[in-house]
Length: 284
Image (cartoon, rainbow, N blue to C red; front, side, top):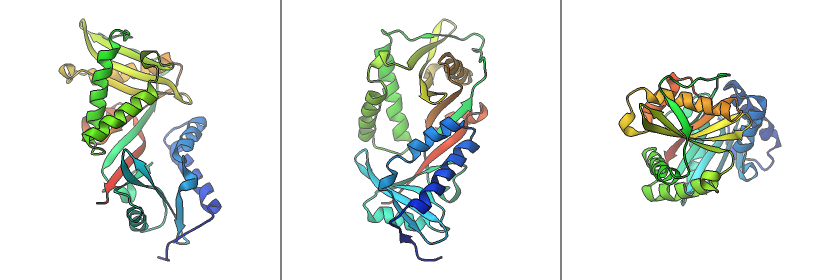
């Protein structure tokens, strides 16, 4: 392998990188507007990335602060055997951990633990609610108790994924909820549901319509612990599809944290494919 050198100009690299990102999203079934919206998110901060080449391929890396820790990120890697160089560069710039966003399988990062996945599926034209399950809007009076339970579950998911400590997860949760629900129960574009069966609330749902072009994001489709193992998990996914059409969107997307194998198995069986995946490795 030729020596890897950092380049000042990035024109020769950037066009090919963006096309590779778009190709990955198109292959995952994204519409062109959605693929380009996802590309816009993927290249956020690109002008600050460091780009290197060995003459045969490319490496793009950077380091940023993430929840109080220095995080390295490998944004692009087409140099054969270039992973070691990328990890070393991140470590030399103070990174305690390195993260990579992947589409189309883990490849050379198969030994990196999964931090999280974005899943997506196009929904049926007229999805039906499962027999015996009714859905209603969560009331404003129910919202505070729902919020407390949702925040606790979110923090637990982050910690289980190995991404952050409990204290860091609480700080992240506070920021994320403030960003996504600035007006709480009345935040535009967000809908909250209660799922009922046999006269009991067996779970809740929280979705954001128009999150991306044609996409409803399912922040939460939660079956209460005492009602799990009864087939309601699959029913909750059907509720998410129904809610997606209620909001006028065509596809549903959501995130699942690493370490939640039960949920990942459910999503595999219900056809929610991995759109992209985030993996990480501790460097210290």
